[in-house]
Length: 371
Ligand SMILES: Nc1ncnc2c1ncn2[C@@H]1O[C@H](COP(=O)(O)OP(=O)(O)OP(=O)(O)O)[C@@H](O)[C@H]1O
Ligand SMILES: [Mg+2]
Image (cartoon, rainbow, N blue to C red; front, side, top):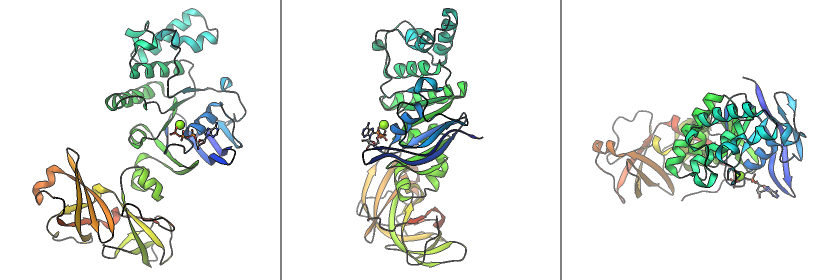
């Protein structure tokens, strides 16, 4: 698939704050594209630039090959669902949804048919006559989506579409959004600071930090091969162990030395010189913990550790483990407990992980964390 909505070296500065800082990315036609990042990283600013509510300080924006950088919002085939839904309180659900077509002066019969279609799409047929005040959060959200989709935009922009909803409703609306996307096939670009939301809804995700895109990829790529320590820690859970490169092999592998661990060989995300500081990132679910030293651990990285804390999470527990001066998080499902008995705070244990589950990232200048 080809590039559809393109940001070409786009910057938006407010004084000396670069809210969006040299962003180049291309959203493909019909995909669900997630913009993920912490508060203030520039997500809304980027969305507003795509919608035309704001103009870049430099760079170009193209849609389907056409330069739209200076096009006013109403001339763009793009619609936005705002975080607060921005529904008209005095209009009914049906009138809210019809609004765009009314303004465009479309015939009454056509409006009626289109509104019926949209009400069915978002499953609000029974609520057509209600006012926004009489609706739940999830229902308001669906009205906002229907109101934006009725104009048949080529791109639907959604700013934190689920942020105002409680957890259960958020999970339901995630599935709803997915279904709506499948039915209409419109390109969706949605903003969220919630990694779970981004991972479950998006075909691809751009992880933003300080106005820049740190990494762009599928949810799986972002999760399993984060390229920076920021992405590794923002997407999913991870521990970082500080270490350095003792030797580099011709094939791109390196011997890593980290406090609390035996030296082990791992692949490098990017070429680093011998002696470089690194951060070894290991996902908690990739670490197994046992009370007894593991037998037959060919090729695994094995080390003794002590349990600093156990956090009970229902189906699983999270363990804070100390290895020398460093801390490692591990996750263990309770149904595995029978292997070696429960593990308690204060206990001396053994941890092991496969070297291929250790991501070795550039650690230059990164301060130790979580020690
Ligand atoms: N109109 C403005 N004037 C001055 N600074 C602005 C303006 N709009 C945004 N900013 C600044 O730009 C940066 C990015 O803001 P933006 O709203 O894009 O962040 P965000 O990623 O959407 O954050 P959140 O998750 O909190 O909504 C912030 O530092 C913000 O203060
Ligand atoms: Mg925002």
